[in-house]
Length: 119
Image (cartoon, rainbow, N blue to C red):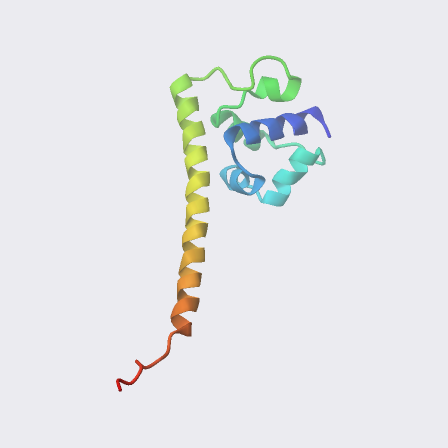
């Protein structure tokens, strides 16, 4: 694994995101992002720009020198990190809601179609 690949994984885990959650934010597939973290390919210039906008210090990514987080405005960087974490939580909640809906549908299907007769 290349050092850039290792640093990308460190940054992603710092954000609290999975590859699946981060890749759409970069406009790429999860498989493409996985290749970055495996050291098979390296990000494009556009992807470097998007990572920088998310708060990553590209100099650190390439060289390992300096802080992981860029020197941009702290409030913007922190807000970006909070948004990324909240989006991940929202996706998880949406998944749970769908699971509950599916379970509810199954339970409704098991109900008798007509009410029981009174004796």
